[in-house]
View 1: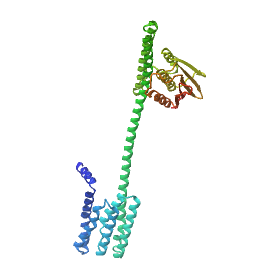
View 2: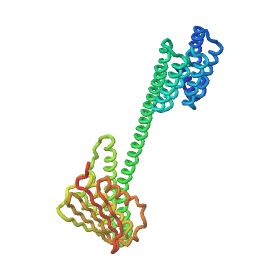
View 3: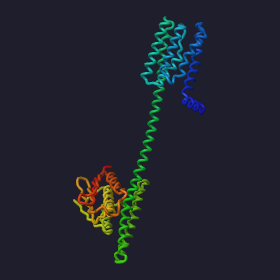
View 4: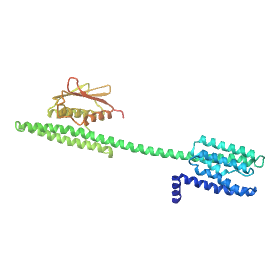
Length: 389
């Protein structure tokens, strides 16, 4: 089996060798039949051999020009009728030629070529060999030409079907790989966003409180000590949130639930207090009754407020900020404004702003951000209270 498969691969890579092999095979099949017919009808053996060899000669280029090869084989068969009308034409070569046309072209072309060849050979046989005795042989041309075309058409259809299955499987495999890569990328972005929101916020607060402690260490040790206590508390909170975040991220993969709940609007007062301790005056306004959004919406709103205030404290050079919450029509509106001048701690990387946009979009909401006409910066997000699943 291995040797046969190796031969198939060798012939498939060399079409000229395949064509020559088919021509030789056709000669081996057709020559004994032609010689037997010539002996029975007392015809010249030399002429019979030459006609048979001439009939298979076009098959050596059948892969390049299948229709001209079929026409050449029919022409040789016509010549066989003309030279020895009582003898049979070169049917084997014509059958192989019609088969090749059916395999290499479309169905309509194959059947038209087969019908034309059968019609020409039938009419020629009836003209050169009239009478009832050769009639079965004359009519047989319709049968073997149709069989050759039908076999070639069936094989071509099967190859096309297998090719379509193979292409579909390859496309499915490519789609599967692309989907897996997309999910990996989304997961990396999600992890980076979570870690950025947690780390950037708390490091900003620690930096601000460390600056306060350093400034007051000589003049007001008591307040400096309080600032150091807040650094300790903020660091502990940062570690707790990092642990909870890692637990949340791992929980999606191995089925474990996070040990601590994700932050939401209930933790908003503590978040605002941490900024107030860092020197940023933050005011909270709520329009309407307190909303009870879904966990994803609450987490998104919390992270957007956290990132917006972090940017305000770190980059805007602002002295105060306003956080507004409003719910109505199934939408939670979150607005964070400040009076900053844009001359704070320098320009950021932009990852935080990108993260806010991504968070709002992942929750099914929208976010807009930009400078205010009267000065300062404004971040506004509209989030559905119950995101669509």
